[in-house]
Length: 347
Image (cartoon, rainbow, N blue to C red; front, side):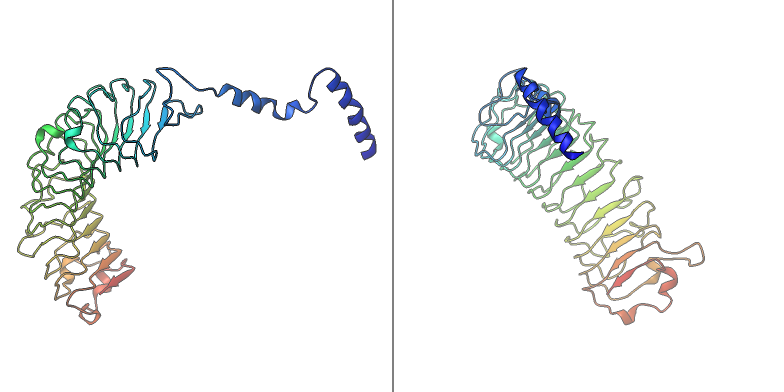
């Protein structure tokens, strides 16, 4: 039977070829048509030679890691522009005037300076949602940023001051990374950010918690500053706040008002590497508490549970107390009733 099939195929092959047809064209004909259709899109201008504009994604332009020192020409169809990991030093006013459809602009890890960014450079970007400017040499937030921004990352620069005008009108901003700068005071500059859910201002030079923090925050990161106290009612108005990280500050017991952290909704609290001598009272709904590397001398079970019964107990899963002045012998014998879901207590 196998010999018969081979004989029939060998008989058909010359017949097909004699008519100028490939007998196996059906195997790859559809794929050939697919790749043939992927021709370079030149709408709004040619793709610059130093970048890649894949036909399969014609609204994206990849210019990352090309040793560029200046902005390339940007076709108007582009929505996603990747310019990170270059040596670009300036954004002139005219550099982005044709890029009116941009949604994402990635310019992290360049050599941008504040005085080399035109005051009108971003004016035409009315729909920009993501702007990444981290790891540059900026000393201030650029002027006239689009009010459409949802995600602004300007960390790892040299910014010392943020003014209310810098962020005015940014009603849509939900993520702001300002960490690893040299900010000493934010004043009321964050007040306009009514949609902000994540704020990272760690590793700056703050000595106090910023005023008028947006009330919709879910995550607040203040590590590695010089904050020694918290304002009265610090967390009272944050109904959505779940994560607070304040490690590596100068917090003392005296600087934390009573029951500051005894608020429902909080999931994680990091107060490690401060100067606390007591465990601050926390809500029974808290799940992760980090207090390592303080000066705590006593394990106060009342900080976790004021009442213990079948329904009243701490939901803590993680408790770190290592690097303090207590040992496992200092943990009360009845702590297992209060901390009944804690998988491990590090002392």
